[in-house]
Length: 390
Image (cartoon, rainbow, N blue to C red; front, side):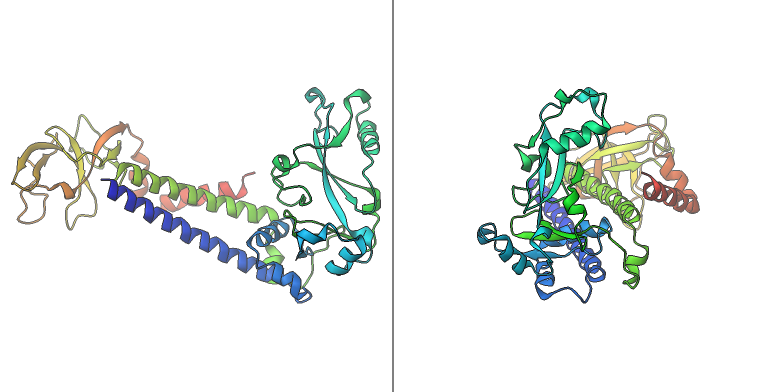
């Protein structure tokens, strides 16, 4: 029994690994339409790093078409002067285009005044390396929009535990893919930069990325860029997650129950009155020994649909037990349903033993099986709901 469980878990792990490879292939295709000919060799080489690819996809989803990424020697980079960093990164008009993301915390925050944008506990500030954070100026900015809140409830300081808030370590904070959503505060000096782009940390100390202030979508792009919006991409991902979650749940149920069909629907009235058409049965195949009176589901050759009947006799041929079944509402036993020249079922023929019944739930399956067009209509409507829902 343990070997069977282990083999099923291995099979599930292999399927999940295949799914991960498919996702990686999707990322590569997206990056092919994202990268253009003006990328430098260093920027293209950075995309070989899986972490940078994830960050690049995040930028793509946010319509940040012009973002670039570079890998830098983190053990030396922060000891360099700003001029040397400018020279290393390239495409940097001045040292004032080198910026950093800082998470600040309102230590006097009072939840009763909470207001999106204007009164939150944490903010992400983008400032130049050549300047310092004016925390009092930040407080004045928000007090201007929240005049009814006393100034004693404003006191901005650097957040102590930046990594737990953003998911990124110190010197690596980036607005892309933060663990916690927070409002961005951009200094006026950064907003006035010409040309309007900056270099920021990229989620790791050795990754840097560019952010363009006035992002304009290029006109000549690979077809995906012309129609693939952030919202539609996210909804497609949500739909794929729904199907993937259903697959994981199903495979998990198979591994737990040790049955190839953890749930089945009663399709006939042969087990009435105890079980009626449309009832849903939850099965388990963990029990080796079956007894008279147990309700089981079995499959025979040349029959695609499993049969739900009760064991009425148990025999032993010296090697393994043999079972004879019968429907509660039938006059005769099931020998006529078995394969030719078969008079009893073996343990391997039995899919599982019924351990739980849910009344009438299976009618949905029966209706969709009898009306295939309805099945496609329901699946289509559910897919549209996921795609169009917020």
